[in-house]
Image (cartoon, rainbow, N blue to C red; front, top):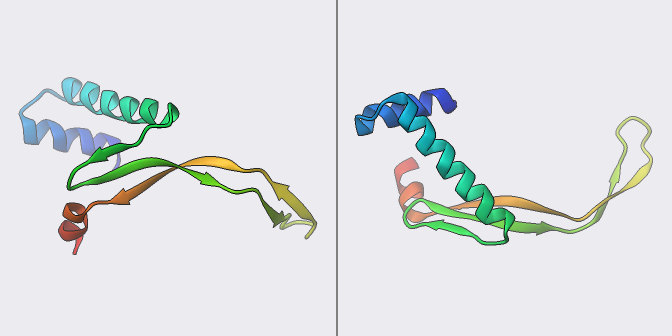
Length: 90
């Protein structure tokens, strides 16, 4: 399912116009991104938790030359599924 299909599903489930569903989805994604950017986590009970994880610096290899390179530490977004989502998938 892509973003357009998700918007159609939201519009159908809530009897909202597609434009309103689009704005609601965009606002939700923007709010989650802003919270993660400020270091907060977003917990949706029964669905899951979005959080920022630290990735340590490490050595890697250039696949073309085989030379060792340094990969810098980074912050990456993470998601941990909640019990309700896990049960819905299984």
